[in-house]
Image (cartoon, rainbow, N blue to C red; front, top):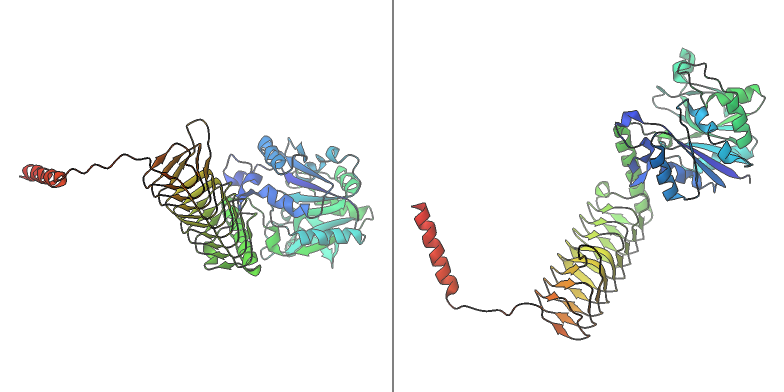
Length: 450
């Protein structure tokens, strides 16, 4: 199998987005459009990848290197068309021998299986392979003039004749060819057209004139969805979520109200996970088999082991690691904390920068006071410890195995294993004081009313 290189075009300004952010960095399911498009191509195991940046190039380069520090990023300083954009990748692919695939950073949903079909067409002898689709409304799309899968030429809508505009087989823009052949054809592309641009699409006619073969591979129109406006972005998000929900259920998860659950691009659910309504996933979440995520919970950057119960109205933040059978209840927030098997955090608590031992019980209103205004500090709670309601554990502090804290305690010193810590003022009762006080207040209210 020949080596593969990816050329991902990400230079456009995206003026219709009405944004200071480069179009390809707008997110679907918490990942930039650019990364979605790039990941499709990664299934081809490319030997090299080149990102062609332009508008907002520094931000695009930063996002690209966050995904792959070794990626080549080149700049298209003038927006002279798609052929000109691809040409900017030539130097970065110097010495590369193999096929180049041209992808688009604003077209996030090309299926890896579709790209595999294009590679198969190349291996079957096609010099140039173009991805096409049958458009419900061809409109502004370029038309593919073909006989069967044999492609003769591509005509841009603005340059097409009425007969060509009647064609419904349209161009996605995605192209595969031998890299050297691709760049040689691009050198021959001119800009004698209505837009005065160098069209990548012209390489098909040039290839045919040079007695090379060109073939079209057809995919579903939904794969070619491009994002040019905020409405397009919302449609792309909806399409991703619909697909991800269906995938989760096909893999054995239960979503009781699927349309209310929102996934991130990398959410992973095990079998027999139950997801109740209005659960939202941020990036980096893995939920193992048999866990239950109750309504209105938010999870991000966390790992939930089998048999855990989360929520309702719980928040798991990055670094939350929950072992088997952990219970995190309503209005509980967990951040950068390891919670061991069978521990219970049932009500109205914040556990941050901490370790909670196996079977520990964290009472309602407990707070780990982890931040002193400059540094974060850790709290360590031992196995089988019982933390009384409304306890404030002022880190750094350790509560030992089997230890207890009295309700309402402020714990500032380590508590030995098996000990009881009381960190509150002694209660004082003043007989009759409440009755006298209320009588005085009511009399004052009566005077004010009169």
